Length: 413
Image (cartoon, rainbow, N blue to C red):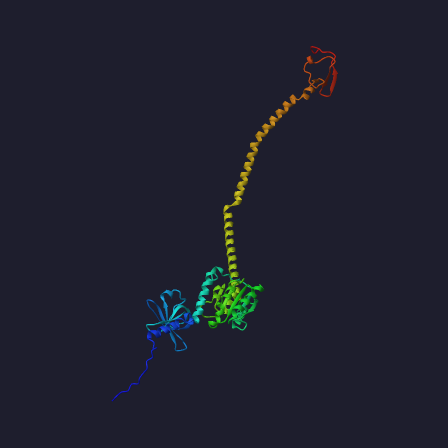
């Protein structure tokens, strides 16, 4: 039996495996779109080797995958590491591995996708604002003890607005509430919140501001991590309370606010004291004041009784009588001590008076003597200084004479 094999024509232009691989390599690696490309997907596997990190990036919606590699020289530059099951975005270039006949993505950068990307942006913004000191506890301002006006920034349709109003009315009747409406969800919310805060500041009546909204999904809270809102709260001229209802990590607005409350109701409770509590505190202070006054009164009465007993034991009447007797005795001694010198002085004075009387010229004249004076007033004591015809004045006990010398005698005849 004979077999029959069809004749095949082999073309002269057939490529070798190496040639085909080289052609594909040049085709892929020289394409401008593939030399730097962003690719998103889910990490389906990852393994670390000595030369680098190898992982597979898979399309979560379609049956498609691509092998990826990050060499060790690029590892420290990655924003995040590929972890199995996570959504990421990679930047790299397509190259061909000739030995295996496969193409792969040589990765330079890895970013988180979806929730991971938002988390990365959140961390970067938080680190930058924290470096500026916006979250420092020293910047936190105390809330006024008894505000007269409270401003509220939230959505008028939000349940948070009703919760805040009811809480403020219940806790602090008579409070003036200033409402500044704003969107608290969506792309336009950050700008709306900033404008609402600015309106409150321009009004100038509010003592404290509540920035609030109710609970919701993480995406709904994105406006409270917006840098514009954070800086508006940080630079607000009055204390700010954040009352954002959520069960998650604190937002950047929570961190920069002066007081953080995790629900609108809690924010309203932080803004004003409870009137019932104030009344109770007032009554407690009155009781303490009355007790203190009564205690002081009892102590003073006791001290007064002790002083009265002490005065009684001192017997001041008897001591006063003794002092009076001593004073009378000293007075008598003083009189006696001063009487003798006084008598001696009187006697001496009498003696001096007698001496003066004896020496008194008038007394001498009274006994019949006379005083003869010359014209110049000098007393004539001798006839040697006198001359006949000279005028003299003679003073007698009563009256005087003016005479003229007619003769000078040696002796009185």
